Amino acid sequence: MLTLYIFTEYNVYTYYLLSFGDWLMNAIKDLDIHWKLIVLWLLLFAPVFIANAQEAPVYTETVTLEKVQRSIDTSGLLVNPSEQSLAFKTPGIVSRIFVREGQSVKKGDILAELDKEEIQAQLEQAQSLYTNAERTLQRVQKLYQSKVVSLDQLQSAETGLDVADSNLRIAKFNFKHATIKAPGNGRILRKLIEPNELVNAQVGAFIFASDEAGWVIRVGLNDRDIVRIKEGDLARIRVDAYPDKEFDGTVYETAAKATNSTGTFEVEIRVAPTETRLLSGMVSRVTLTPSEFEELVLIPLSAIISASGNSAEVFTLDAQNRAHLTPVTLRDFSRSHVAILTGLEPGDTVVTRGATGVVEGRKVLPVREVASLQ
Image 1 (cartoon, one colour):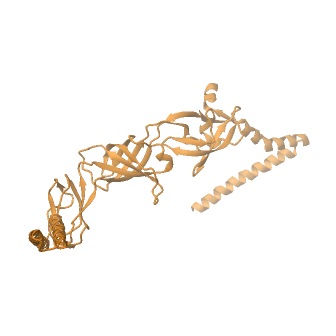
Image 2: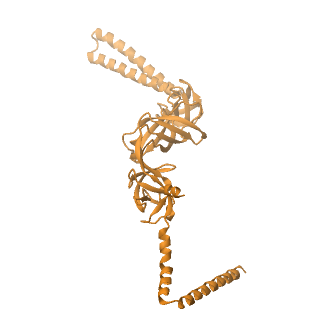
Image 3: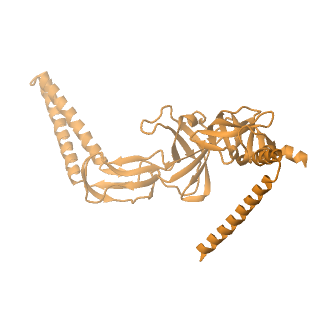
């Protein structure tokens, strides 16, 4: 039914259009040849003159060189700069663990210890060997004074005592480091061992972070942004875990060499002390504010007609208000403006709104002139 209706409406429209065409042709036949040419000329060229006579009204803005403080938006992970791996000096079986992950500890708190039976036996053995070497040296010294033994025998006894002393100190050191203690006030970030587990020497047992070191965020900046940042510049930080909170920070370190893997320069940002509970590895969004201002050519974002990558096009006006499509190179964007690297100079006039009705080379009517005619 709908198809039939459309078809019927189309036929009616066609009928009236053809009827008007027949009437127009019959009217032309009755005219003199000169009038026929005039009517034909008007039908062909009148729309063109009417279109050319219409000057499209547009909004414009004069390009200026402005000093701006452009921020840099980036992101990184929250870390504690004092993170360190704590391990046993000697291999052995884990006897006891006194802490859990995330627990706060004080300096000197015992975190874990190995089964010390074997280590204790090694210490006692080293102590016995040292005592024996000490007695041997005393005996040889008396015999040497009586000229019963040679100087070489005396020196060998002295060397034996030195070796025994070294072994005793090693045994004491291993016995001491069969227990892991907190090196300062802080928090256990990770626990990597379990009771009764056989661990090797110098293999990480805990990841520890000091409370005194605070928190930092490490971000990567490209070469255009790293030259705008220096130590002491301010930063605003938002953590995904606390979307309604904003933390203050400052740039603490900037790398002098790009990383091989990413090609970016690492920047370390120190977070100001806060009572909010922060955890290592939290995703953070950072807005850096360079302390130095830049002189940039800025135009409204609405002036961009088309863009591809860093290339774009805008309409500029000459002294006769004729529009020209001008290619430009973009440098950076903000929420409302775009910085132009090449293509525009201070004093140029760009079309900001109304460009959809503008044609290359055709005159337009800026809004300020429209207003003056009213």
